[in-house]
Image (cartoon, rainbow, N blue to C red; front, top):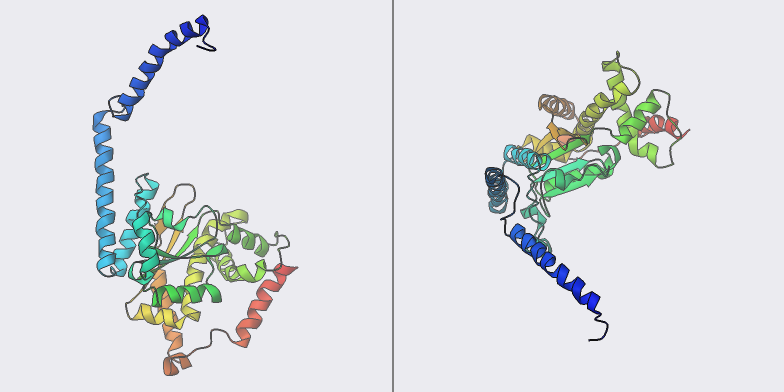
Length: 317
């Protein structure tokens, strides 16, 4: 035997029993015999996960058989988020069968929610709601603003993908809201060319927050401005998307506001009263406009454009 020195043979004899013992240990561990967790804990965890999978299967079966109601969708989103932040996510609809469905079926037969959220990398929308492919129609933009492009995408999600719910989702530590807050407070810095017109929709929310919470100063304003920016998005939707408002008025869609906490994984769904008030105000104003008469409305007037220009001209300086 070439290369087999007697010392090598002795070494091999000494390590073979040890190797066999390690193999046996790992084999028993893989079979579950070497688990250090109490059996009760393992059983409880397995039961919880089994129940979660069953709940997800039931809810998604409802989608396949026909879209759930808006309230049912909101409950699905809440339950999905709870699975996510408690560590019991099921990661549904991520396998080959779903890939096949995505390539052969209409997403409108599956997606149950439209969500507009921030582009922030800490806000992975499908993950935080424990959803998968073709479950959520997602629109992502810095500051979760609802401007022309975003409103068009929302209209597509509600009218063509037929999602019963729109979620306007803000998040804690939002950089866009923080930057606008600093600018409004006079301590901002020069921004790149295309950022001011992107975030100018946030300015009214920040100013409203400062006016409402006049006892706050500096960065204390930001958490309140983040919530106000969610309401601002719904205001912009109500003002500039008559087709979305029509679907809401007919009961075919529901708008909800929510805030995702990047440090806990939890989504806080905001009260519906402000949403109702905003939509009622919008409908009250529109009754006297040409939209109610002809079904058409311009999304922007010269005065609107001039106001927008004034709002972000300062940010360019």
